[in-house]
Length: 148
Image (cartoon, rainbow, N blue to C red; front, side, top):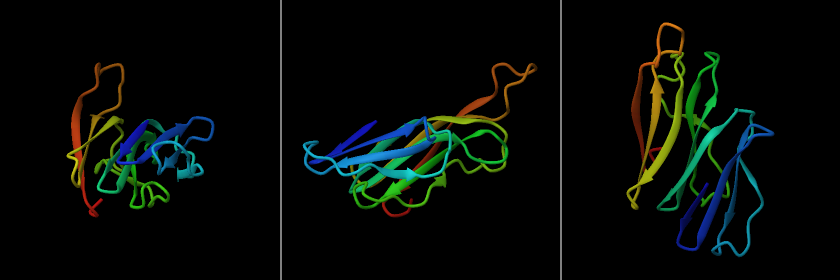
């Protein structure tokens, strides 16, 4: 996925071979590119990667199998230097460490100022033979300026 702001371009993707998130940044409209950087270095079975840019902050979100429950959770990483370095990976969905339902398909939106909003689908229980389709809901999380 790609995000563009002024003369800067960032491409972020999930590397299926290694299971991590990687990114590459151009500061000159894509004429030259910085080296590939790891957003997350651990094998996270990442999928559904999205990136957005607002006020110099980059946010990457994805869903992954992250915890001992074995379900998918929504993760994010923040860059405050246009994607050259990334802060520690965090879980976005607040119930993720305690539930057994999958949280998937995050999408990002920005107001163009300093607010990024993430929406995702939350399956509140695991799919089994007695529950089809699984109960699900759309969840929202937001990130404002440096309070990510």
